Image (cartoon, rainbow, N blue to C red):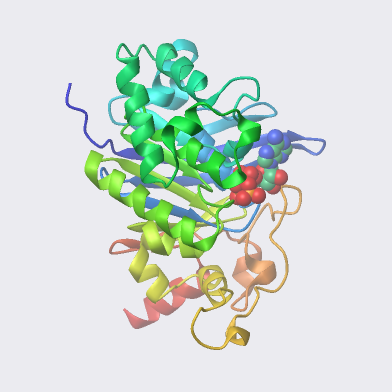
Length: 330
Ligand SMILES: Nc1ncnc2c1ncn2[C@@H]1O[C@H](COP(=O)(O)OP(=O)(O)OP(=O)(O)O)[C@@H](O)[C@H]1O
């Protein structure tokens, strides 16, 4: 069967966690399309809901969380929100490869990496286990590791960066055509990170994948993503082609994130940290704009009306102040 890069359509997705104050949304009414063959990056500060959104793509949100509304349509699989049990287990790994944020700690400490690779293959009905091992060694080799040695190792014998690369190998090795990478390079130094991102791009192009990269590091998406989506307080505040969004950010939060990056060339003092802190589930405003407490463009309407995502060509932005400006110029 010839597999092709699947498209993904997330529609009106809301994910809540049960807290002492009741069920509160970590992801609220998000709609996002991953075009077949694209690399989409999702950025936002800690707590903005990125990992929760990534887990939803696998219908893997665990209690006390649950998907409260919306759909995640994946070509070839249907709406994964409606899948359960065996269907879901099969989809994970074979159709959807993933590296979770905790990849560095998610290996089984009692088994070698090779044994875990074979378990993964068997649980997905792979007949050619030798081929699977060959593929794993090849991927590890490309990421600068000695494949045979790594497969013979236990978790404790590997550094954080090595475990992270093992996680990426496990996400790619079953040849899934939708790949979700949650903070794939956080334990890596800058040079290794650049190398790994290059390999992610290469493998993505060679295999014709649809890839989602979740990161708090806007430099990572700049390096790797075709499209960029920015999350804040569980909402998608801006999205569009990466170059356009980074070159001319519209949402005040995106502008703040970009201004906060220390430049490699130029005056390091020019970087300006975003004032204030991102909200927690308990402090996200229940009405109005989620970003208003930190926003330099705040207007009265922001306190009461949640700004809708307004499309302008390939870009969307959800901000009253920006929408007013766009309308004035129209
Ligand atoms: N199991 C849970 N129970 C209660 N609240 C949770 C749980 N998991 C996540 N949350 C809350 O949901 C919100 C979104 O968390 P999430 O991990 O999705 O964000 P994130 O953007 O990926 O952040 P990080 O980069 O720190 O992982 C946060 O406020 C977080 O505290």
